[in-house]
Image 1 (cartoon, rainbow, N blue to C red):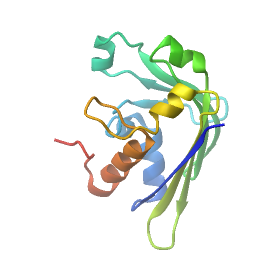
Image 2: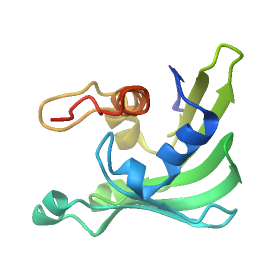
Image 3: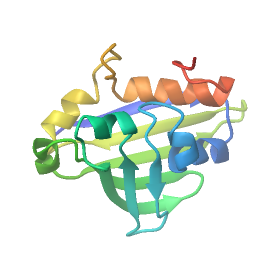
Length: 159
């Protein structure tokens, strides 16, 4: 079994964090900069669209997909999550991803991301990788970039 729990503290409201995680306008600004599209209700569809550069490399138009299992804005989102980059990624099937946003009395929020990758060894290996110059980076990098964007208005790689 491979369940990874990532925890970060962000000086932002639960609403701002929720918006950054679930709206294409925000998801296009941090991490891999891929717009996320959600139908935020149980059974709703989720997807990330490929960037122009990804399309040039022959990747599919939709590179990540899944289903919303639970949406309790702005505190909890549970969904399935599957990579579609390659046939091998696709064959690993869906994983389970949970975002939990908890405000603190100190004026910041705790964001816990739990990713159950029990049947997806390729994804499990890739999502724990540190940032690298070839464009890779796991959850730690993505969440650090989200934190930077929300707290400063700039992602870590902003020009």
